[in-house]
Length: 114
Image 1 (cartoon, rainbow, N blue to C red):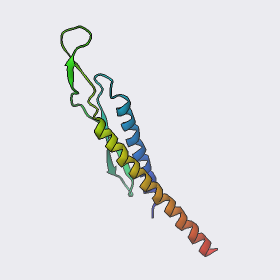
Image 2 (image 1 turned 135 degrees about the vertical axis):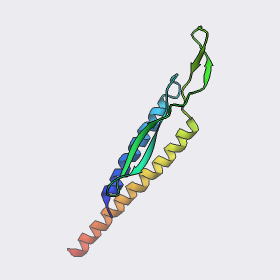
Image 3 (image 1 turned 30 degrees about the vertical axis):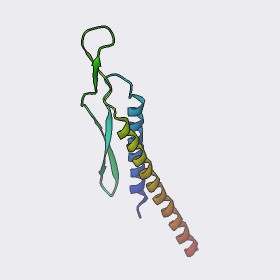
Image 4 (image 1 turned 120 degrees about the horizontal axis):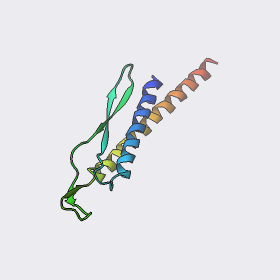
């Protein structure tokens, strides 16, 4: 079992959680464009994380500054973000458990040899 693949997955899930945190923090920022993370397999069974910005428009409301026109709100979907956070946590936990199991097996192997 290769610990490197689990470590790269942990890094990718960290990037995903940071992007989700940024989206949630900016949910009330007018005109904010949310981002998402696309997980991709890399060389040697590694996992990469590519951040993609969602340029779709947010909801439009009448401009609150008194000027005629419309004002764009954030396009962050809180239901999607909360769901993504749960999935990210489960993926992080699973890869952490894989690393712990690998280290335990290596320890047992050393005990058997010694």
